[in-house]
Length: 630
Ligand code: WT7
Image 1: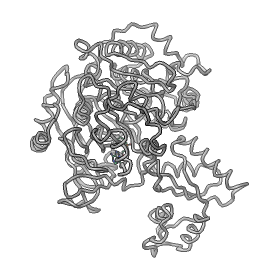
Image 2: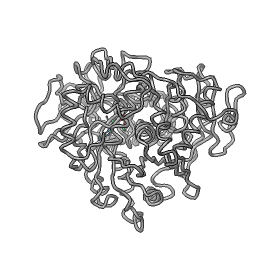
Image 3: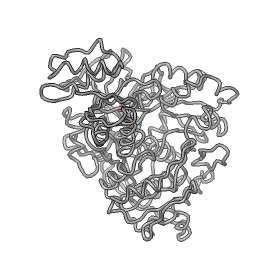
Image 4: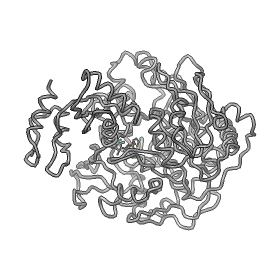
């Protein structure tokens, strides 16, 4: 199933387009099924309705764990590197991981969880997080992992949207030299979550927490009451595997739904190929399991291929900017998969942190989350890869389940800042505003996908109409990604960024509407408008224009109050980098905010505001420009 030459890539790609069912049917043979499918694919993008491997039965954990036991049971599955480098790292072999997953699966059952139940996971990056995820999958429960940076309100919204029955958390988390009180946050969230019956709490940072009688139980106590045998639940290929919430251009975050069979095949296939993974190698993805990258390329993809996956609790700059390089040296990492924002941040410390570090184990480098600028690409290439390790710039999304457009390591010729070519089975198309295809090379347009792939989302939880509206209605019969894209003379793809009102801040997806709603919750704020602007490290920063007419006290303190409000409503990751108080916003006569103008002002490019003739009150623009310069 591994592609090793460019000619082979071309052949496989051709086959995947000409006969997708045969192509994916063959790929799927590399996985373990309880019962085979009777139909590889049935689909329409209108409803949308997508079914892969119809009729097939499986359990993804048998693919990620059981099937490796006989030959590779003693091989490391997970290497855990703690936040504090003075602490011991932990290695879990496939045998150990299997045992712990089965044991914790029994804990879930003991606490009332069964197939189809939704379970919220809010945990630090510790092995128990991967164990909790896999234990859910083992019993057929649907996990909904929430990143540790989200607020109580965000958690409650997500828990209520999918009516979670159980929550799995920890007393707290370490993040660099900070400590996050996870259980306190969960306690606040659960005040407004009537569907939650039980909360399982892992001891990690050893901070005191409140334990509610009848609801809260300790992970450590629970595992003593059960054994470590747990037959995997037989799942239909199209049964739900997990929900992952992500931001869009409007309203509240959507619960993107992935299903068992197609997701497994897609995560496994793309992992094996894109990273050219070789048995015995150590693979390190620096993402958090709270995001899709962690789901697909720390847990499911690597484990389905019997790989060794490093799970790192901390951050790149703690205790110092050589942390990644220390981890690479210590665990002899062969593949490093990280984000442009991390690269830019580490770049800013110069070469000193690299001195004396042995990076010779590195064979493949990967980037994900946002467009990688050329400067960062070259630094990564030269300083980390010593001009020998191919860089795979992988474009994909929460909704796509796995990597879509990317070089295949050692196979595809790379080009700085280009995600290069579609993987087999992926059929990209560029369209103009009217949905007409833009053919040929040396063109750019809106990026859509015209044919299903096994890892694609099936719905948005509890609201199929929203899935249809968001992804399948902008252009008829196409999946719309929300990204702009350029296809150069070589047919290589370069993602230019979102074309909708979604920001990408340090690789995190944040909707401008969400941030505006949070700011507007602050007493005194009448209205706000949020746009992105270029930020050296974060990629995009958040710029908020705020109308707050009867401001009490000092402007600086009020700004801090607003930041506090955003932190409470969404989480610290959504805090604006800049707040500008204004008396009005540029609106069209129909009352629509002209963000195009605000973006220009945020960028400092006030000489080219474009056409402002449709504005209701053009004078407001001059006033904002004036204020922005102060
Ligand atoms: C959005 C998806 C997929 C994992 C992490 C983010 C942007 C992602 C790239 C890349 C340019 C990229 C896109 C996309 N993006 N990877 N290699 N080059 N842009 O997942 O939170 O669902 O965000 O991230 O804009 O639409 P996500």
